[in-house]
Length: 268
Ligand SMILES: C[S@@+](CC[C@H](N)C(=O)[O-])C[C@H]1O[C@@H](n2cnc3c(N)ncnc32)[C@H](O)[C@@H]1O
Image (cartoon, rainbow, N blue to C red; front, side, top):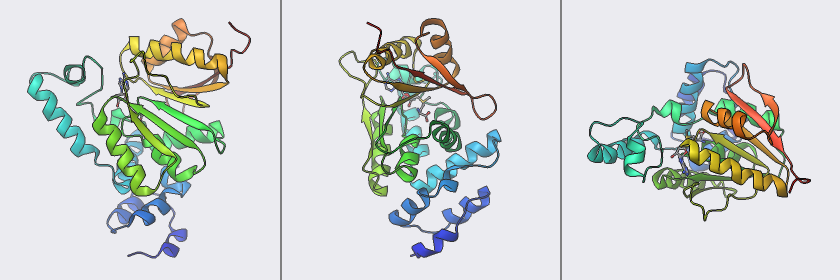
């Protein structure tokens, strides 16, 4: 077993540092200790390939079994739709919901280094609540779990196997302030949790994103909210139909995301 007092000297400068650590057999507390180090989630440079490789190494170190679970989901989908692709497999096995089964794992989730940058911009404070709408395995919760121990995180994810895996990792690492709820965001009976910050990365069909934005508008009538939007569909829907959201930050070089804010307290 490694001694925890070895780690204060451990800084992550290059991918080789992660590869070195991944060859060690770390215990849960040791991995949790790594995840409390901001340099673990950050990258100095914003190179696309390195960004994705870095995130995959971090996933592996944290213990996510993403490749295995995605392969199981593809196998299940191929039974229904042998000639399908990532456009059709999700809807085939999930009641028409676009769950992106078979999508390249690099594209499915936002890189950790981009999330770290977003939370620096947002100046996340203790006791704030962050909700990821369509969370997949909940990378955002893993980052919050390590770096922001007093911030609450809730992910909402349709695919139960992804939600279960995220919750398993949070439990292993002792991130009791983080959880993923397996739920359909388009289920009209489901109430989006009240939160300070919401995140959407093109989670499904246009109609579903539209429904979620309308629910967020109701939330913004009760309290101030901030919304991080990644992906071109959600951006286009906001531009066309949701002028109640005020653009607060537009990521040009650091990442393809925008941050909006709204508080409609004087609206009916
Ligand atoms: C592109 S991924 C983004 C994952 C995560 N937000 C991130 O950025 O790392 C979108 C996720 O939304 C989920 N999703 C799609 N439609 C959904 C719905 N109606 N309800 C809940 N989750 C949904 C998909 O299964 C997928 O895991």
